[in-house]
Image (cartoon, rainbow, N blue to C red):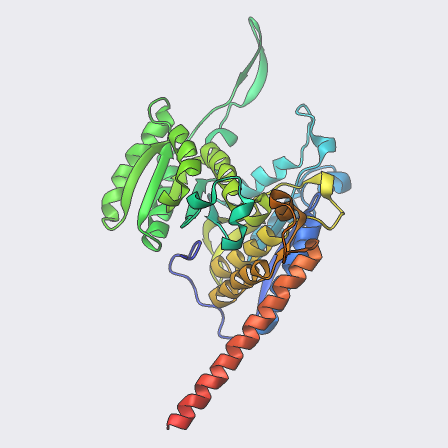
Length: 406
């Protein structure tokens, strides 16, 4: 299996024996605090095993911030996120703020974070754990070889275009949303996708609606202009509706998918069903700015705040744990620790550990152990420690064999 996403020209971790990373942690709303708690414990274990440490700064963003301050995010908390090496994010959203006419809503903070931090690209790796193929609603035979990376442009398009409003017109209420992109916004995310494809299986799928939208025609033109810089990468264009169909019919044909903001939001959530649960898939939102260790970014599970199960210790923390692994790889220069966490997740699942969302998909099976949020994190930690011990034992055995040979 290819690595979900690898930093471009990564900056090595500090040579200091104990590098200490400054992280902002945003537990957020609903199940966010629970999954973040599990993810933090996994990261702390990885730090202990691999020789680095964290300084955590907790900030309130989302519904909890509205409750505390009257706004979904304060300026000083955005500044704290910008000053940190990376941001570890839970989930935001609270049903008491769902009124579309409300002046403030939790989700406003997420859009402001993306713009304020310059998080122009969202990376969503989609892989299927072999032991979870039965959990997917898609036929198991179609899941063989599924390993894709969806690159979503994150700071342009309909989500940010102006005007965006409902107003009174001559014939009643009318509404307008504006889909706006600059050439530079498109070009930078397309070039990132080409670079990522070059490091994987060298296939790039650009998704648009060029038969209808002017923005998509510019998107396709720029992909074609960039393509000669990457002669080793095969490029195809797909219309978004055709791509949505192929994601279910033949998902293994995709390597890297690059697309605009709204299409990427929809397609990446559709692709999540391949893995068996929204609770399985991580994401990274990155910017162009480098810290001392890598690219600055925000790391979060793709799922929402799920307020109906908040506080019940039943949420799946794996997406949050794997988002932490992406943070180690992209922003902190700790690729070996990231790989160890990913392997530990696979080992815990192979050992039969399942949160309720995974059990619900197939029913309880022999050899499975139904566990809650923190117990799943415990299982990953145990696998991480066992994997580190096994690596150490293998290294000692190897050293002994070389000494004997001498």
